[in-house]
Each structure stands twice: as C-alpha cells, then as structure tokens.
Length: 243
Image 1: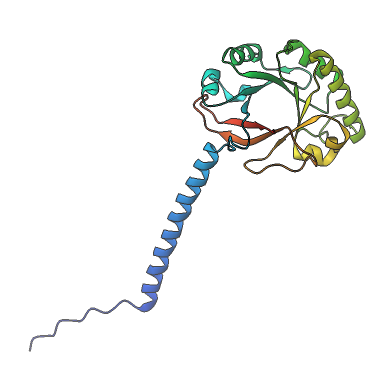
Image 2: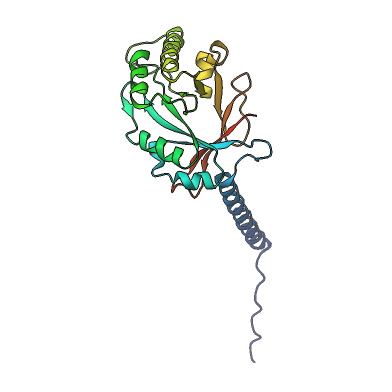
C-alpha cells in the first residue's frame, strides 16, 4: 500500500512571533538610522534665520585648515573672528595673512585670544599685542574664557583669576582702543561668575538653542559649532550678532 505524503508541519506560533519581532526591530533600526542621519545633516547645515539675526559670521582658527574667505563672504558671512593668540606664547602664524585675506574679501574682521588663567596676565597681553596689529578697522578683541585654573602647577585662587583677567583686559584694550568681548564658556562662568563682575559684552556658545548661562543679554552667539560650508573642508563655527 502506498504511503500518504507527509504533511508539512506549521511553524510554531512562537517562531512566527519571533520573526515578526525581528522584522519590527529591523524596521525600528532603519527608522532610527534615517532619523539620526537627518539630525546629523540638519545640524551640519543649520544656521539661525536671517530674519531674526541678519548679521552672521564665523570663528576661524588654525584647526580649521585653509579657509576661502571670498567663499565665506559669498555664502552670507558679514564678519569673521580669527583666533590669533593663546596663553603667553602660542600664536597662529597665519593670523596676519588671514586678517588681510578676510578684509580683502569684504568681511569685517576681529581677533581672539584664548586666555590661560595659569599664566600671568601681562605676558599674555604682550603675546596678543605682538601678533595683533593696532588697527582701528578691527572689530573689538574677543577673549576666550574656557580654561579653568584647576590644573595650574601653581595654585591660583578664584579671586586671583578674576583680578588677573582684569589686568589682561585693561592692557589689550589700551592696545586696541576698544572694549573687549568676553567669549565666555559655561564652565568658566559657573566657577568664576565674571559675567556679573565685568562690564563687557558677552559672546556665548550653545548649538541651536539660545544660551542663557550668562545671566544677562549676549552680544554674540556661536549657534552652530560645526556648520558645513563651501568655504572650508572642515565645518566652521557659525556666529550671530544680537540686534
């Protein structure tokens, strides 16, 4: 007698549930990848609306490589700040070339000093005035306040940090004949509270959302720390001015 063909057994329900679960996880992973890619792309290409902040520009340093200032002007930059000096001895050897190139492109230009609370104020001021020319066409100097005194080889008290900073500001303001702008980091402000102690305009930093840690209105805002532009192979820090 011929045997009846064996019936195929249906997969257990648990197997179906497992497969459906894997499909769902795969779909969620795809959505997450697409969403993450969109967020990354949007962040790299986002700048505050011109209708609200019509004056915009960039912060440029040696780490940004070669910058095409004519292209920077073409994409809508009105000004550029260039990192010129840091601490007591560090300098960007290309700062004069960059200042001239930016001005030739039709941009307003200014210089930034990265302040080091571990180094004497007068030595840092001497470094700045050596590399930054005395030129009335320059924008007010900006002083980056990010580094804390926590790791100084010689202990520096909080009051001494603020006192030395005042000395530094007075010396570079005598050189430039303009009040400096405090490019103030959130950590520096939380420790030393200089926004309320020093009567200078503030330059604050926060991606996409307006910063509030200064405790009072800001003048400049680094709104995107990594904006992709045709002016440089590396993303640039994009800055807007408060009206």
